[in-house]
Image 1 (spheres, rainbow, N blue to C red):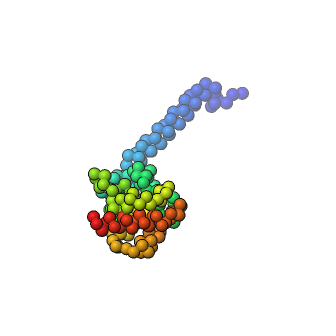
Image 2 (image 1 turned 60 degrees about the horizontal axis):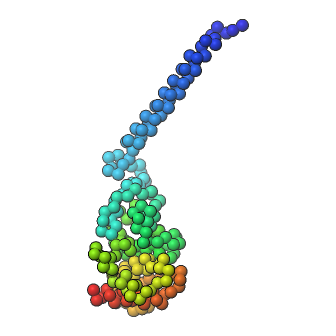
Image 3 (image 1 turned 45 degrees about the vertical axis):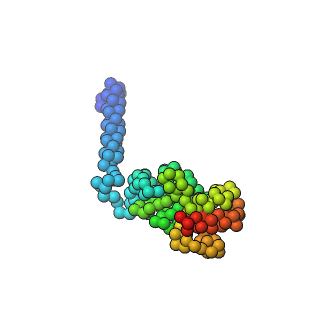
Length: 211
């Protein structure tokens, strides 16, 4: 005997109602997601961020130019320079602040960019190996010294050495060979051609004094 409350004729109506209900839930979810996207915290600061949050879209001053870039809170300066700004002269070697291949200048001080979080250098002046030459292509004194003495073999470590030496020579423009060796001692050469590297960097110091 059929239950008068549940007839087979009601099935299409129930299925249709269920489908409409599901469509309504999906539509509501999409609307909420869209609203969250449109009114999320943005780089212009209209909406206050949560305590401890880090702004994603930041402005960096790199090689004299302001560059707007989207960065993750855990992103290193080396990653940003290479993969976001295309400045591949900054090399990533050990990626743990040991080899110095990623050295850049931050406010004229050499730093391992693989160990500097990008969002911490907002408002500072960053110089990479690409920014040492003048606008007309004239090489910096240290770069000229490297060319003059052919101071590197594979040259993977060369940008880091050049940046470290450039920063050091700003504080000691007339170093002894031993002083300059100490000044760039945070940089390693996989080819172990340190004698030629120091000769090239000393030539760069000479060019810098004569500039």
